[in-house]
Length: 203
Image (cartoon, rainbow, N blue to C red; front, top):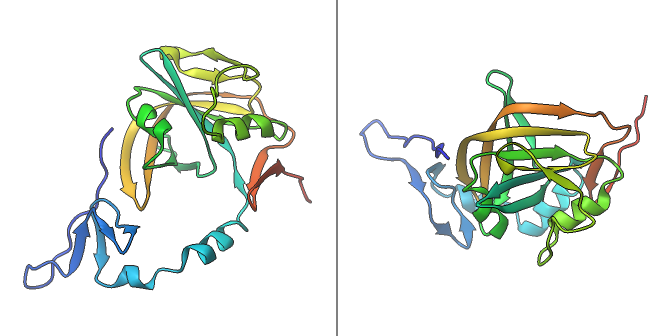
């Protein structure tokens, strides 16, 4: 995958007045190639407060799958988003230390599955460590290039890798969408305050 990195910023004297780095600072990741004003990281909110605020944000739930050398990989993500209409791009984040990401990053294609409100157990299974996520009761079939396609999802998007960027303790993964299959569900699956649940439409 192509690395997407910002440029170095220079002062009027041609000397960097912002730091471009890819190392730790006080036990926090500084993004690969990130351009930061000196001292910015010292202003970061504490992790507990940050997690508490994010818990109030309800997010959609997807499962990302791929196959490498005959071995299927998959993970649950709540960080999925559209990026661009032309070209059609989507993205998700994977943890740098994720063993699943170590496999996914080698794939020539991946699939994003939008989950329905009754697929709580499937979402939890692909978020769990130490289990065979593709064993029963998971229902799936091999798609193009062997990419695992999960059954009964609201939609799946087939993607080819477009680019990645290291950001904090995660990796931003961008994919170019090459095919879609949409089967609208009555209620999508959401993640809120550490729990999965159904969305109830309002007015």
